[in-house]
Length: 397
Ligand SMILES: Nc1ncnc2c1ncn2[C@@H]1O[C@H](COP(=O)(O)OP(=O)(O)O)[C@@H](O)[C@H]1O
Ligand SMILES: CC(=O)OP(=O)(O)O
Ligand SMILES: [Mg+2]
Image (cartoon, rainbow, N blue to C red; front, side, top):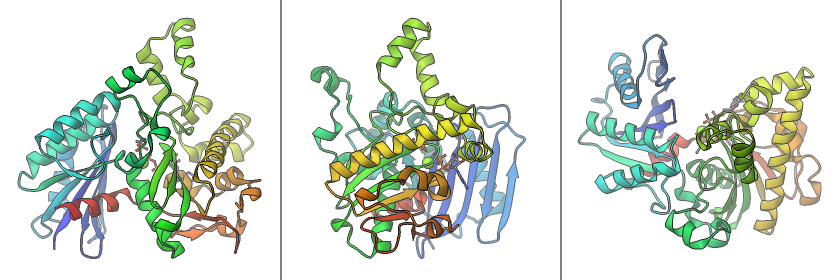
């Protein structure tokens, strides 16, 4: 039976899944981490046999080497591509600019566009491209499909995506808001509508994708009308290592007063800010644990984190002109009940409530966390970017 191999490349890692189309079953999944470091780390799980393997000893120079390590894991531990022939390889591509409003088969022109857009996503697009090139070489007869994080947000109106700067300059250099995590926002909004048993077309909702990277999106009738990430995935919410919103003048001030170069400031804002910058630790689990033990620095950082989320909830309720649902998803959104409760505390005037028993229930299923009969349905809905990529890739080929 045919399957789709999904490759989700990050800047220094990638996740993959082999998904059988019939029944949408995961046949294998894995992770290649610490690419470019002294020793890499790989994990592979054959879901058919339950066989799990890992290798933490060999260096993985680049994404091409990571791809080779993945192929070796399939060869040694299965399942075999002979028994599950590939219909397509689906690639998560972070930046699709204004060119792509849907998934696309990768030909030379698309490859060139992804390369050109690397200037707008230097941490992500080059890695995505390496994954595509490695997959083309390994599976020359299989369609390569690019699924863009930005595509779902191409419905933003000019009012929502325009930065109020010199228009000519902005157009010339494609400076506008694009938005990211679109594959997740799309999947989760549809899953939430299914859960509520209400057509997506009738719903006004806010999806909070809170992982290591985090973004909020206002979705009206299934269309993204506003989203917190902008030209790059740096804008918006406070994240694991990214600052989210800052006054752009912070950059010039630090350049002049602290003598930092623009590259240094860019790295600081992307990789040494957010929870990491505020507490020395970018992992929400650790920060939450520290706060629960009474660590004041961690508690103060979480206050900033929640304050920003609440800011977007209020703003998006206004942009939507009403609210039917708020949906939490991704690593933090799905798992951190205390954060969910404290973020939404005091929003009863919007119809937003939290039922503590429902909120604290540990479950991997879509569920309500608002009070029974409340005007706004507050939900937790697990995201599945890989499945959404497999669906879009399969639909296309
Ligand atoms: N049980 C949990 N409680 C709190 N935070 C969690 C839990 N599980 C995962 N996380 C947090 O989720 C984040 C990672 O989310 P994820 O969606 O996997 O991110 P990404 O895809 O951007 O790497 C980390 O900050 C991690 O600490
Ligand atoms: C676009 C983006 O921020 O992705 P991630 O959350 O995977 O870093
Ligand atoms: Mg993610």
